[in-house]
Image 1 (cartoon, rainbow, N blue to C red):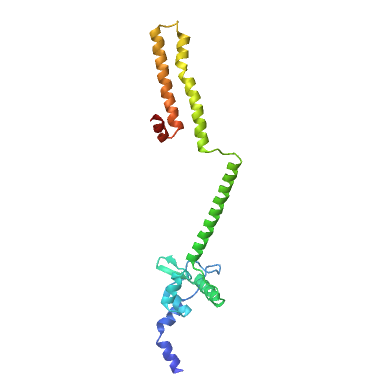
Image 2: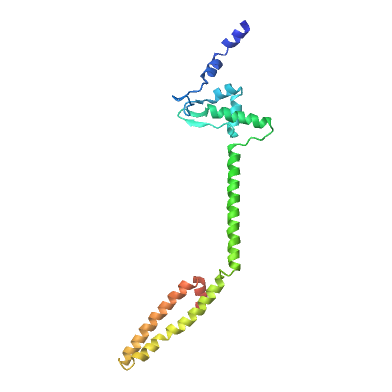
Length: 208
């Protein structure tokens, strides 16, 4: 009896810490979510583990902490639930997964889904190309060049045609001046079409 009394009297701090562990309820009798936070030393005392071991479990993502006005603290009920699950998984040979592992698993799943979607889109695009819904860039450029050659010939003939229409109604000098102005405007317009329809490096190549 005296030995037991001596043991209790030598550890007053431990008894005090254990007495501090209590659930605080609200007016409805439910556990308050913002009033049951404890330091690592208290959790270690409650679980019968060292502070270092609790910190290790925290680093592994098994026991989460919450930021409070007093610093990082353990929410009592979720901490107990997490630790019980950890012990249960360990007893049945299951490998406990940390929050980091769960996050990586989720990211891997999202990446696989994105890859599957891109593969489906690529397959759909290939199918549409086979069905003739798309034409190659080279075919478009060739068709544009052919159109532009025909259009250029027609446009460059306009000044002389206009001159023939107005010849006899105005002075020859005015006819030549009008023809020159129209020809200049058309040339400038055609150069603009060339720049818009063909890449700049191709335009330089054609000029050479």
